[in-house]
Amino acid sequence: MNFLLSEEHQMMQNMVREFALNECGPTAAQRDEDESFDMEIWHKMAKLGLCGIPWPEKYGGAGADYLGYVIAIEELSRVDASIGVTLSVNTSLAGWSVYKFGTEVQKQKYLRAMAEGKSMGAYCLTEPGSGSDAVGMKTAAVLVGDEWVLNGSKIFVTNGGYADIYVVFAQTNPELKHKGIAAFIVEKSFPGFSVGKKEKKLGIRSSATTEVIFTDCRVPKGNLLGQVGEGFKIAMATLDGGRNGIAAQALGIAQGALDHAARYAKERVQFGKPISKLQAIQFKIADMATKIEAARLLTYQAAWREDQGIPYGLQSAMSKLFASDTAMDVTIEAVQIFGGYGYTREYPVERYMRDAKITQIYEGTNEIQRLVISGYLLKD
Image (cartoon, helix red, strand yellow):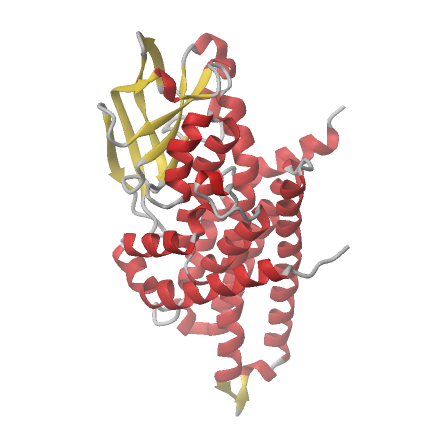
């Protein structure tokens, strides 16, 4: 068993780390303050091949693996979690759905566009009345001739407005409950599609989170993803992979917060010496680093299992649960190490703490992760 990164993975890590520091870092605080996303960063990521890391070259991807992709999300989020989640949703959710369940025509058209970064992907599952209870969705899809007509709305859509391609879940027959749900690929340009309210958020503020509205939105029959009735299965399978992307985001947030806290502890002088010489601070740093390393091993293992074709649903839920809890714990401690300065926007650790919270909530709350994990362990 080899825990060392391959030469290719180290190259990916170094390349994305340099990109994040040079291209994302200088404007991260201002974009957070302005709640603005910079498409120029997306275009630069596309030029580096980051938008389609795990997808085959025949679909415009880099032909790398899922572990390499997870490493990239970690390094981006180590500097700016908003950029990390933008890529994660494009790849782990929208891209993964099309790659695993799309037709060859759909892959060539839509997966290629997302992988090359010419288009951005988004994922529309959550509704005002259905969050964790996805089966309760009210968005309806009716087949009229050669088109599906969608009516309803989705909320908390990451990349909303900026994305060109939306994977959307809708109910075709409420009496069938989860067996009536279907998935569709919806273009931003389709008649009846519109972007609603943009959320004002606690964290990941430079990532757009919006409402998406369907008003007699006409979707070609050929844009059905999978078969009618497979939508719920597609959504749940996609979230298995997506959770590991969120674990990587949480891991990056935690590592970034530790980086800043350790550096500050060596510079901040109290009682005539750097606070890094105080045992209370040393113990905090030790605990933070240990939790991060454990989260990294869980996250990398889940990605490795997916690359090997080994079932990874359990490990993905575990990695998301543990890494997100770690991110919250570590960022709180980072703010504590900074003291009063940590509570101000003069230093970035308060942003890391705000960004960390959402990782315990989206792509399945941590309460849902515990249900998923126990379901694997206690099934007959």
